[in-house]
Length: 379
Image (cartoon, rainbow, N blue to C red; front, side):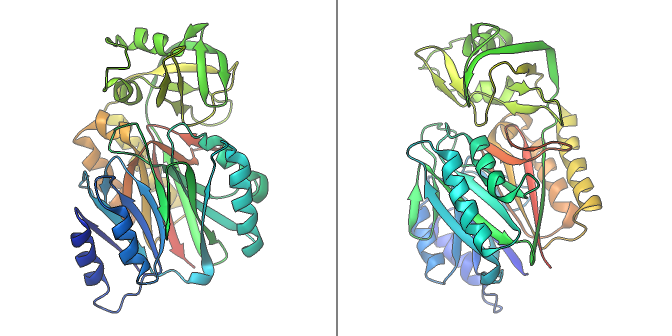
C-alpha cells in the first residue's frame, strides 16, 4: 500500500498538493482528512470525491503531517488501499444512543469482514466515546483493534464535526472498517501525566457526566486544587486551563490510569462532562503539570509497539490531545518528530478533544491528554 501526506491552508493549496501527489500515477482510494473549521471542508471533500476517493474526516484543534504542528490548515493522508479491504460508515446519534449506533456499524462491518478493525472519529464534545467502544466490542470482541479520536473546533469548545463523502454532522461518528486479513492495524495510547495527592471518591456520576467528587461539585474541587480563579461562564479560557493542566485521573485495577478532564461544564450544578465514563464509586486523583518525561514516555511506547507488534508500517495516523500542545508547547515538535522517526513513513495527525485506544496493559478505552498512534500496513 502506497501512502502520501499533503497539507495546505486553503482549498487551493490542497487542490494543488493533491494534483501533485497524483502526477506520478498514484491513485488514492482513501483520504484521512484532518481539517480546521476555518477552512472549507466541504469544498475540499468535493475535490477528493470527484476523484473517487473515500473520505474519513474530522475537524480539529490543529493539524500536522510531520513534526511541525499547524493551525487553521488541513492535513490529509492519502492511501491507495484496495477498496475491497475497507468500508466507510457514518451514522448520527441524536438520541445519545452511542452504544446502539456503534453496535449497528460493527454489525455491518462484521458481515463484510471476518475480523474487522476500526478507525473512528466522533463529534460533539459531550459524546460518550466509551459507550461507542463498548458497542463495537459487543460485536467484534474485547480484543478488537479500534482507535480514533474526538473532533475539535480550534479550541472554541462549541461545535465539532465529522464528515465523509456527501455527509457532515456535529453529532455523529465516522468510521473506517478494515479487513484485518489484508490490512494490519496496530496502535497504542500513551499519556505520561503523573498523578498527585490521595485518591478521591466519585460520589455522583452518570456515564460521562461527573457531578460530585468527595461530595463537592467537581468543578469547584478542580478549581480549588488548581488555584483557578474566575470560575465563571464568562471565562473563555477556563476549560482549556482545566483540560490542559488539572485533569482527573481515573484509577484502574488493570492498566494505566485513564485521563478524564472536564470538557463541558453544566453551570446549573457546576458539574462537567468528560469524553469517557467515570463510574460512580470509582476513585480519581489529580495530575501534576507535565514535564519532559511525558514526551519521552510517548516515544518509548511507540518504539515498543514497533519492536513487539508492528515491525513495518506503510502509514501513520496520530490523534494527540489538544491539551498536550497547550501544556508541552515547543516540546510537542520533539514528540511528533520522535513518533515519525520510528517508522519514517507518511503520517497525518490532529490535536483532538479525546482519544480512543488501548493503553499499555489496559482495556480499550476513551482517553484524554494522550497520544494515540496508529500504524497501518498492507499484508
